[in-house]
Image (cartoon, rainbow, N blue to C red; front, side, top):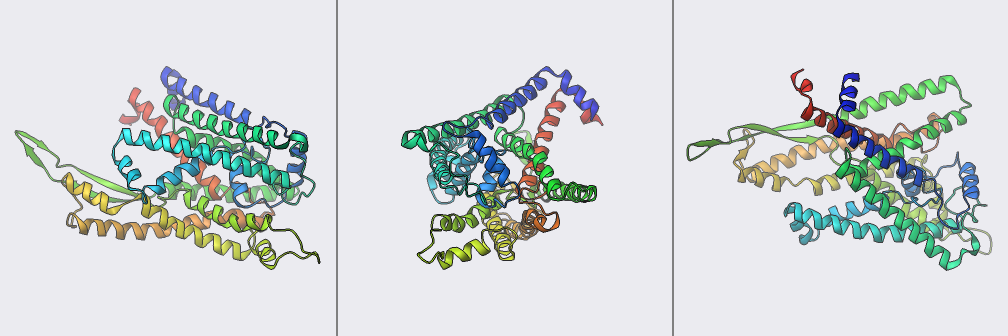
Amino acid sequence: MFSAIGRILKTPDLRRKIAFTLGIIVVFRLGSFIPSPFVDFGEVQRCIEGMANADAGGIYQLVNLFSGGALLQLSIFALGIMPYITASIITQLLRAVIPHFEALHKEGQAGQAKLTQYTRILTLALATLQSATLITVARSGNLFPNSALCQDVIDPSAGIIGSILIVITMTAGTVLIMWFGELITERGIGNGMSLLIFSSIVATFPDAIIQVGQTNNFQVEGYLIMLVFGFAILMAVVFVEQSQRRIRVEYAKRMVGRRAYGGHNTYIPIKVNMAGVIPVIFASSLLFVPTLLSQFNSTPDAEGNLPGWVVWIQTYLASGDNPLYMGIYFLLIIGFTYFYVSITFNPVEVADNMKKYGGFIPGIRAGRPTAEYLDYVLTRITFPGALYLGVLSLIPLFALSLFNANQNFPFGGASLLIIVGVGLDTVKQIDSQLQQRHYEGLLK
């Protein structure tokens, strides 16, 4: 490892790329602490301290995680990269509905450039909508759970002009983050968007661990149990994320003139977790919709009673430690895993491409039998992957009772999935860059 770090420092191009990436990440993190116009930063910090042990839950907790805590601070980067993630998912899903998007996907680099442009435009629209919603929720005092006195985080005298200025600032911040991510992808190392999310989540780890210690009076035994528990989960996640089913593919040898083409073997890698973190985002977003509707209908009647359906939602769906919430959350993740995998991996398309280039799976006829076989393998391998996602996502909810923690428990859920996935991918890219310039790794 130390020799590899030494080779990185001795390689000017690679050293420059890593330094550029770290510089963009530093600027991104600094922007997460710059408050938006008309936002009382001291009042925001007081409200955050008041809800330190509260259960934020839902999509706000997820967006706050992806923004590195910038959402609840109402900073210029409050929305983080979440609008871009949502726009990318929507654009990907539209490929299965709109033929034009699927045609652009198959056009190659030119089609991908147009899809990227559509994603940027959709990101701009979503950022405007989400920032306006965030300001409305912040003014109503519902942004900070269990803190009824947090209605003045935005200056009441700001008015409509002030609200419009805040929306413009937050939207511009999202566009700037999107540009940062593209700069890292082009001039730095790794995937820019993923690394920005990675840095945001890692930034919340120390605070999350300190909060767990505070709720347990900093007992050494509790810390050791949590670290051992977290390290075991981390090892299991790395093992599953690297696991894949390799389907062998052989290509027939073809003679073109006096030259022979083909005749080599390869494989189709089908990962156990092909869906990544997307099903967790889908399930969290869908479960938060009823809670959001109940917040806007929480006005009591003349007798001081809330509507029955609002009480039921606040009792069973507003808290992550409720068994009904856990069960629905688990089933939604499994369902969304199958749904997303069926959209992103098309066995018929893969079988047609193999047939076009003379490839076949040993023992399976080309064409429709190959597609049926791939669909059979994909269905079987997705089931343990869906169970893995569901169990991993429930770990922060179980931590509510095991470690008396909140849902920001660091060792589990979407945060650990993203950290492991982005970390492994970045290490692979750095290693490939080293192997292009130093051959020691290839000879060992």
